[in-house]
Length: 113
Image 1: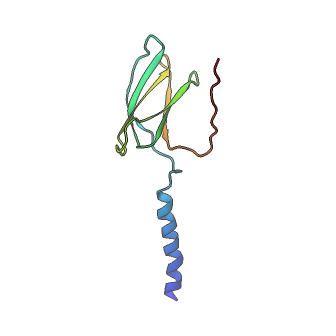
Image 2 (image 1 turned 120 degrees about the vertical axis):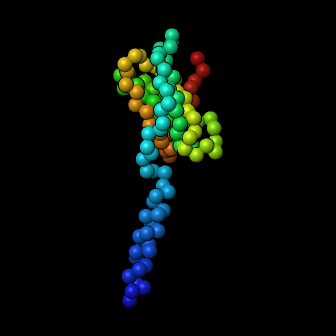
Image 3 (image 1 turned 30 degrees about the horizontal axis):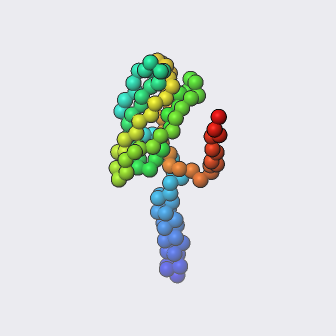
């Protein structure tokens, strides 16, 4: 009888352990090392580190303009460098997050002029 009670517990523990490896869990924000002042083109350079294979989104909350970048390096664990250039002015708030690829996307090709 005690063995019959342990199987559901073992199953629950295995499910919990498997869910911890899921990439659907929210990631903490990336490390932001530097945010520059706007350059002559009105772009701000943002640099930092993120998880390997994660994309980093940088959004200017004032203009709703932003970019998504990934690290050019591999095998860097949680210290993969990234750099983004985003249109922003002095005093604008930037929202910065990291995420893994999503499966819900479509592709579209830019036509020639």
